[in-house]
Length: 190
Image (cartoon, rainbow, N blue to C red; front, side, top):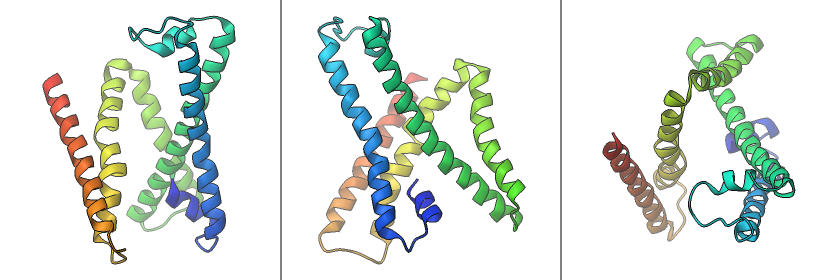
């Protein structure tokens, strides 16, 4: 999402970009903190003892609990989907423009529609296909994209700060270990 924000706002506006990213990151953080507080405060009231899904137990409680939980869940899902689809749509449009050598407004819009329609149609097939794909997406590409690639890219970059190499190597090794654990869990579940 950061490259999308930089492209839309212009790279020369670094202070505005920094503020936008910080404010945009605060929304999911605040939702997460509220979610933890709600679960902690209502845990004893609803007898959340660890058996079953706590969200389902909260949703089947009294309306004074159900409505805030549903709004919070919708906000969390919405912020994730909006950012993901904006980034995926821009990536698809860029890939299409790079592949064809030219890019019209219609091509850009088609690529963005396709980036939304493919997952939506896959989800319509049913949970037997969509849920394993969703599990795979969280276990492998996300860890590669957000865990392995950033520290490796910084290690390979020419702008190095003193003392950063051990931290970056540690982050990359930790992410690779997550990948290995996910691979082991994936293979043993089959």
